Length: 193
Image (cartoon, rainbow, N blue to C red; front, side):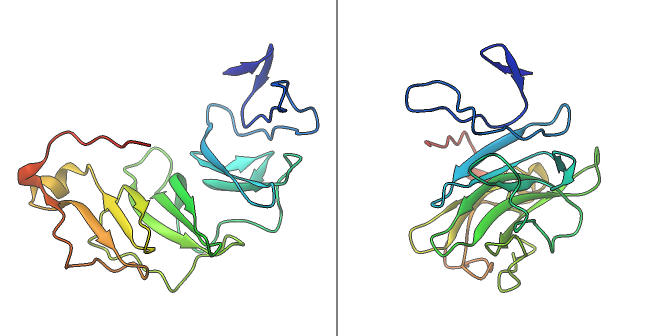
């Protein structure tokens, strides 16, 4: 596990501007052997945390949790509307408050399917966004116009002539005017973050 100044932690830790640990922030406890992947600091000082977990402080929260500034769970936020949500691999908070999330679906320790879901600011699924079943997206980047550039390292998709990159419109439909990159040109791709 991770330690900070000799103290074991299983979640985010906040530091002051002088580099010391902020004692007013009580790090939440994620289930054993499971850790959050990433987080976003929201404009109101809250934290949006995502990863491979299903409980936080023994409260059910599959894949994503919003924390108050003191580290407690924001009870007004909980992901809902996506069946068999197992984890969230990546996320992006949009300027309108919606949250795009790369989701992994399925029961624990099984072959998981992936996709992208868009959630309202309270965590309910945004039903106006329906990802095309052929998108096969395992990762995404939000483009300036609000559309998504998605990519997949799915071997079955690539071996069957699928596109490595696809552009998805703001409603979740594949933009067929974007030709992407097919499996014939598959090589190494690196993300410059």
